[in-house]
Image 1 (cartoon, rainbow, N blue to C red):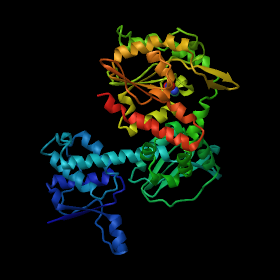
Image 2: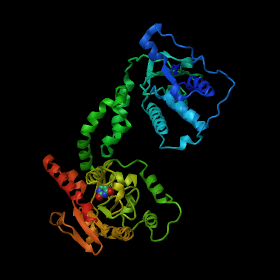
Image 3: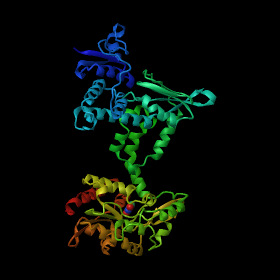
Image 4: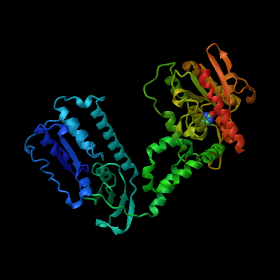
Length: 491
Ligand code: URA
């Protein structure tokens, strides 16, 4: 015989726990219980629905309030989260696991078990929903309403997938403790007045209160948007489209993505920014930054530490820091660029700006993750000319390249790459002392010695600087074709 148990099912663990405890103490098998949502029943039958009382889910079940059921605390924590999931199957699933735990206390550790797979998936979905709520709630000030002690009052509308308001409300209480606020959602609401955090599981109605804070969000979002770092797939995973309708800045996203290439090209052509007003302080910090314990001599870590204090030429005087190579020390492919640019100088890592983006895209089209390769430069300090408030990139001269070759040679000795890819003439000169016209040797593998091949292609900044749109598209395609060959050349 099947027993029916009605629950409100709005993320409240206690109503399920009380019922589950009674069922468990009476030894009722999971298959003998039909867990139902009262709200669905009401929707179907309206007032005619005759629902048993929550306190007495089934008349045949023992209701010994004092009786205790021992369960692992990990299960309680899991149940607390999973009960917030919106899948009506969660009650049965949790009860099945609870029932099985009686016989197998370690069931939760059996990650291949179908019930555990299902419950872990629900747990993950709830955690993700909580995370999204903390990231995507946008408060708007309620203009004509002032709270206790003149506190400012704010309202936010959010649409979670699950019944998580209760779980997430304390986060907002801690974060926005100085203002009064209400967060309303179709799955419950929370409010804070400086004294009391209140939550309700009743569905709320959406209020439309767009105001000038929307414009603020848009301005902020547009100003932090960096086209050189744009990764559309990752961005869409982080900020899925279903959240867009309640995010004021979301309407900018399609335009920013569409304009990203043009902005990137523009950045590439300028390749400069204002030096930070506290630049000299950064410089000092970078020079004194501790690299952890002293590295073993001859290792890459030792080289990197040593290079921090490099003063082999004058370029170190104005650059923020040494930008050393990065990547696995046993990489089979080494990419050599010219010198760090404006963004690399500030970040302390090679190829972080627009040229880096062109390189990374070409690598990923060729099936590589940049992190599999060792990426470095012929010259390790940014050379620039201050013009007004901007730092304009300058090509390093032969002497500077020769001085810095000291580092590049050592990087090659440690990494021992099978293939070295020279991006542009400066890298070629540093690696070979040759000054060939790039067009004459580009794309033709050059044997350096028994173990090493050199492959020369254009520098991605060159591609970005081509003014004519069609020619630039051709150059980009050629660059990507070149890069697509490096995997085969490295084997
Ligand atoms: N150009 C380079 O050659 N190297 C960098 O790291 C960045 C731009």
